Amino acid sequence: MHDPATIEAGIPDDQLLPLRVWLALFSSVKQIEAVVRTNLRESFASTLPRFDLLSQLYRSPGGLTMGEISARLMVTNGNVTGLITRLVDEGLVDRLQDEDDRRVQWVRLTPKGNKMFSSMAPANQTWVTQAMAGLSDAELRQLQTLLGKLKSSVAAAPKHPRGDEDPSAG
Image (tube, rainbow, N blue to C red; front, side):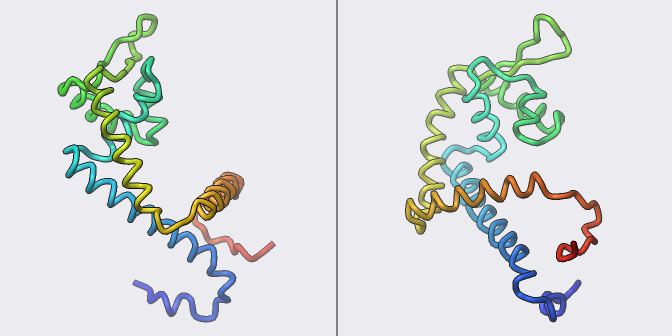
């Protein structure tokens, strides 16, 4: 394993700034995620993937196909199938066959699932708000703007599989 001080030796601070920002951003996301995971488990005996799936279905009252759920959650169909099966067993979601294409399954919240998510969502909003309480509204707006720019920058960045191209070249 490499010593970070050795890796950073001789590299100008301005070249390390993107890496340091990435690490700070990643760390912040992980800390907020840990708070949400703990609170979901303790308050609702639930998990974050379960909350995320219920959230997607809540925003789509007509339901979503398994493929749409996988795409929105950025996971494989296999990961979603087991979770949906458990939610069906608990009466929180319904799984229906598409009338035109029997290979397609639609998933939608049941009234029980809708009620459950409706109690979880405000609690989640409170936890995230509390985690960001150290920032003013103006700072949150600024951060939102900067993260939007970052998202665009990431989308436009060239993809280098090995990451061995010199970012300062060119």
